[in-house]
Length: 253
Image (cartoon, rainbow, N blue to C red; front, top):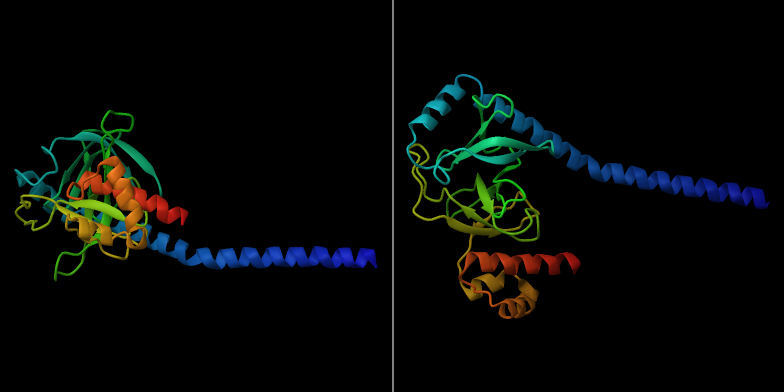
C-alpha cells in the first residue's frame, strides 16, 4: 500500500509540473510571437533604408542638411540596441532629428555607414559607459501631440529605466519640418507608461498639480521626497528624479 501511494504521489507531482510547464509555454507564446514580429519588421525597415532606391534618396537628403542634427552633427561614439537583444558599440553615430534617421559607422570599415530609421532599432545610446557624463539614451516610442495622430519617434529618456511604470522623455521633433530638416526651437517634454509601448507618450506641463497627478495615491509620498531633496516641479531633471522615486514605490507596492 505504501508503495502504491508513493507512486501516486510521484505521478501527481510530475503531472502538476507538466501543467505548470504547459501554462508557462502558453503564456510566453504571445510574447515570443510579438518579439519575432518586431525583429522581422526591424530587418525590413533597415533593409529598405540601406538598399536602392531608398538609400540614395536618404543619403542625398542627409547630405543636404545643414541643420536638424542632434548636437553639432559630428560623429560620436555610441551603441546600437537591436530588436534581437544585442548591444552593439559603434565608433561613430549621428542622429538627424528632423529626418528621424540615425547614421552609424561600420564597426570594421569606418569609411562606410549604415542608416537606421525609426522602427529598425530598439534604441541607441550616444556616449560611452564609464565616462563622466552618462550616455544619452534614445528609444522608439509612440507619441501624441494635441489632436494630431500618434506616430513613432526616437525620444531621449530622462528616467533611470526605459520600461518603468512611468517614463519621462524629450521629443526633439515637435513641430519639425522633416523634409526641410528644421526642428522646433525647443524640445517637448513627454510622459507616459514606460512598460506599455502601445500607449503613446503625451506632453507634460511642468507644474506641481500636473506632475502630482501622475502619482495618484502616492502623490503625498513623492511630494515629501521632493521636499527632502529640494526638487522643483518646473525643472525636468528634478521631475525625472521624482518619477524615479515613484517607480521604485510602484514596483515594491
